[in-house]
Amino acid sequence: MLYFLISESYTFGSKVILGILFTVLAYLFLYYAFKMTEMAYVLKHKKPLYNHFYVYLRQLNTTQKSILKNHFTFYKNLTDKEKKYFEHRVSLFIKDKDFIGREGNRITDEMKVLISATAVMLTFGFRDFYVGVISKIVVYPTKFYSNTNKAYHRGEFNPKLKALVLSWEDFKAGFNDENDNLNLGIHEFTHAIHINSMKERDVSSTIFSDSFKELTKSLSINETLRNRLMDSGYFRKYAFTNQFEFVAVIIENFIETPKEFKLEFPEIYSKVRQMLNFNVAGY
Picture (tube, rainbow, N blue to C red):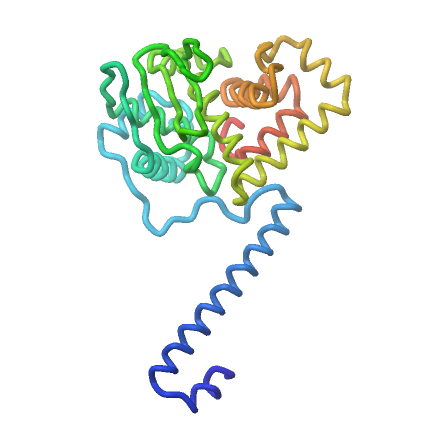
């Protein structure tokens, strides 16, 4: 009503400008009202108002889809609707990242699909699944020499270069035994997701970061649980190197042996599930 009363005394051009101005103001008001409403929901329920909402779903080609069906167990266990969302995200992730081969390693569809699927699996409960701190994924045929600490690595994440670097041989080995709680791809992508959550303030990053803080605080004050965790042998000792290795290792365990994790440490399992906002079969 206010807009129409004001617009009567203006020229057509001025009315157009006013119309655009009021439209933008209305959009901004609704946007921030939604953000405030969702943040209140997140603080109360520790999950976003929604996760998957797409106007158009991208599809993988026949070869790429076959790779998922034959080589990625997580995808095979999803519902038909979830599979479509998963394929959509894998397609977009592949498009968003630069895949670079090193030492004569030629980037193949299998590499793109399985590496991207690992990232999408870990962020399947996130709304923003791109992991913005990664812009390129470098793939060596085997372990590689890292200038970061002058040693040979199987994988690393370099935040300064926004690069995730992997040994393809070791990446594949991580999926050969899906119950040994050793998976290079999961481990390195978790490092990137962890750092991304510290830099970004989107809903999913906030949930991941805040939930991890809650977990570390709980462990710091619960000496009994902390000692049981360290003495159990369920988590490999590398987990207790620092907070970054800790979260990477516990998420490896969460993905590969969720039933055992839930049975051994239900409190920690619940917090990791909250961090990832996992609501899929088997978890």
